[in-house]
Length: 104
Image 1: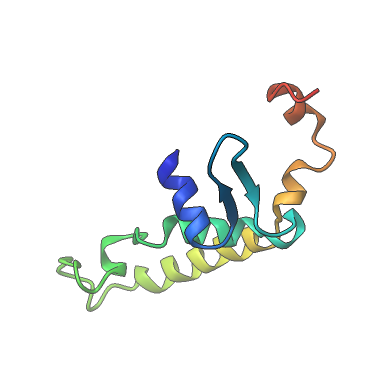
Image 2: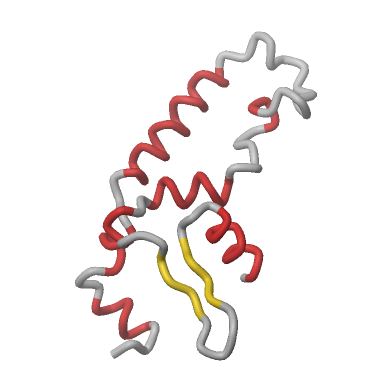
């Protein structure tokens, strides 16, 4: 949990306050934070497939693989869809979530 919070803080998505009255708050309004942006920041060091990282790629067919382009397009569509969803979209009016988290 600490690593996730540190990563989110490093990328300016949350603000942390140390001490007795410390805690964690969003750095921006939830309407301004897209799920796609959060996913990109949390997954930035992890290539989708081995062939996506030219430094560690050992795939013998990557030079002529026709699947790479489709995978890149699919990944772009995946993030594009998540870019259209904000954190606010996930929580506003979500009474079931409030009940599960015991916020009601």
